[in-house]
Length: 350
Ligand code: 5AD
Ligand code: FES
Image (cartoon, rainbow, N blue to C red; front, side):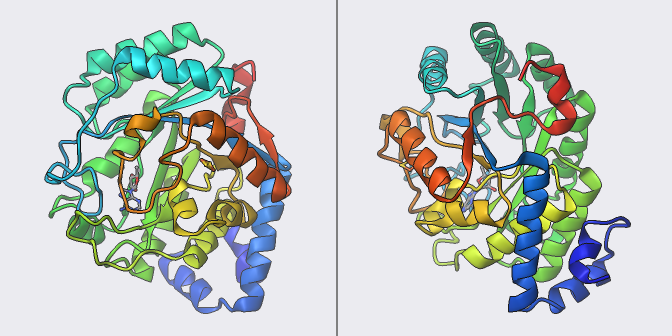
């Protein structure tokens, strides 16, 4: 059996086997890998691409991730937070554009206490009972995850950022990744559909680090995986670091599709920001989700995790149409349903 077929079958590859796999890659079998990833995606999802409406509701953050433009120590960024009513009106606009998943993403903003997030989730779920709510609000005590789940949140995105403790520490001022990884297990146990993920080409990242990420994903078995290229942000200490590449990001998308065939895998905004056809390339490598922005245009450019972010001047309706065209021209079909993971579909009227 060749390496590519081995990826999709148990037992999971050992670290050394992953190294051998990467060493065996050439142009020909890279293409085979991509075709098999597309095949796996087609087997589970046909040509459907799921749409999520992203609401970036606060750029205040108490953390200091060295790569991120909204880190606490960045004095240059103008901070904003949306009110509960603002967030609800983003949902309203999103609902009328057809979205049935809202992703609430923000920095770790102390203003948004557990109670405030709970109230927000309850309000959205009460107003739009047919919609899924995804939280992407960083690390909390397990009891808060339980409160969010109880309030009706369906999914939780928390990129693990780096499964390698050494790399994680180098990107997070010496802090260990133990809490981060544990948080994902906690979220899963609480009952969320969970999303992990990492940046491709993060400063200092080696092939061995990426292998650790793949091994971690295979153990965790998340429902979603968000990966995108690292892109430098000019106010950070990593302003001059090299960005990640389209080629590596697409290669990793294909590999992730093969080791987690049913995973919901976005073609991320970062990938679209790296290359004008980045999201299309991501779909062609095995991705099946896109997350257009629903944030109000007057705050869009302030959620500047990295430089050169696309869509900062575009209305939600514009992005909705733009992305639909891109999806169609790549040979795929927009799916506006909630788009739960196949293992969770039966419990919701989809
Ligand atoms: N380049 C690319 N992705 C970034 N993120 C944060 N900063 C950057 C950057 N400079 C990613 C992180 C985070 C997600 C919301 O955005 O992985 O989890
Ligand atoms: Fe926003 Fe294309 S998705 S302008």
